[in-house]
Length: 353
Image 1: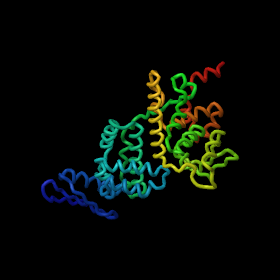
Image 2: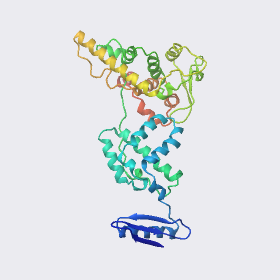
Image 3: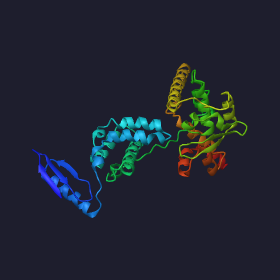
Image 4: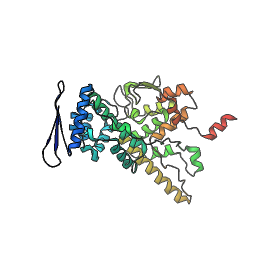
């Protein structure tokens, strides 16, 4: 039975009591809204489909993000990156709203605001995290009535496939540079002893940044020329074969019985690489200016650490068939593997005879 009382201007309080269900109450700005909510609630209770919305109405998005970080994030391999993303989500205006009041239209507006300053892939990651927060709230936090508004909106199309290959010594000489890009980046590493090893191993093994910085000596077998990765991005362990060059690099690091091979934080490794690329480009430009040549606009430009994995995969593809290559790189989906394989047309032409 519903009871509606007027508690002042624009204050209509409705209470619903039905046997077998906890009492429900809400306040609305108009009597019509109060009557509509009471009718809906009583109908759902009568049909046995009523679910309490109280928890979702009392919990703000910011509180849900905090709980998610405490209970869900620590179990993820990318926990630190996710914590940074959660911190940024706490700053949005919607964070102060209750979960029950957030609609698809709200998130569609937020998506468009993000797209004005961020790449589609970044926006998709943010939306995916928000979506999982709503899923966990519904499945594990007692908010069974809570819909997932992220599922109701269109996601940006991701088109971030890269075909960037490293410019090697031979091609670099044609551009007026005595060394290739990778050699120049290593030379510009400065005082860092680990960055040259990190870069060389990335190109030789096709390992991801996270896999390289988490590699441990107890998992490296120099005699068998293998490096075991017990945890990887796709959740499966794999063992990576090591080239002679990779063995040389590892031996230069003074192998130990145990411990990290490269004591580097993932983000710090990327920042060191970016700085080295910048220094290498400046040196190249100065050399060109000293000899009166025009600098090549593509040499040491838009070079990212992840491009090293692309380069390594393309090189290894000339050695291994697809099924073996996938075992080396850790790709479960051949379609994803093909995104990393970018052979040069001139190399394919040579194979044609």
